[in-house]
Length: 81
Length: 191
Image 1 (tube, helix red, strand yellow):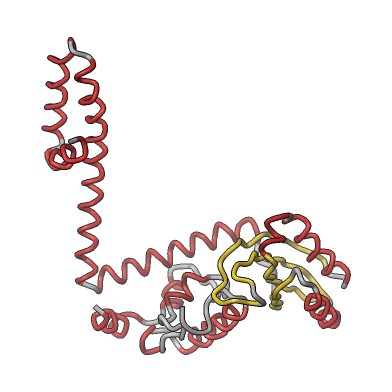
Image 2 (image 1 turned 180 degrees about the vertical axis):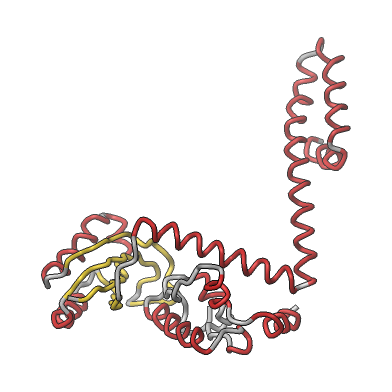
């Protein structure tokens, strides 16, 4: 299961935020968007690597910033669940 | 004057007791330092990801306001002194999001993103496809189950209305014919 998901991201994944932009979403990554942040975090609360999440460099940086803000406000954990 | 987004984490107990007082407490602090409040809304109450100052739950307040950047330091200091405000964060914005439209747009975008994720996963994972079929089956089962529940009361009435007996079994059997899948399930809960 894990392996197939891993493959899917590298195969066609690309950046999910760029994908949303193409569909007309074009929203910046918001630190208040907890479900999205949680999707991109491991069970330990770390962000998935770019290789794993398929994000482009720019969006990974923005995501990093959003995650740090969300952690400060107690929306997502710094560590563990 | 710059545009800011203020995000406040407030004491949950006091917020529950009197939300208006808490909101006005923050607003008073903001206006004290010459902030012009553009929009203010309760973001929601939730469990904190980790304990902050012995608080396990908190209520969030989202305020869009205009402020003089030089006065923001003093405002931060004052907020730090307040015991009602557990944490606060100011983000500078180029422009305020359009509030009434923005909420809908955000929801729409979120749904869109979810849908996109769903599509991607469905397209990729073979394993994912199987649960989806399962879901579909479940939904049909549920539909059948609803029919079954409709049929069930009719069955329950049967013993009570003895004269109507001749008609009702016929109806029940007709329903059974309509929903062959649900039939087995229907009998299980009623018996």
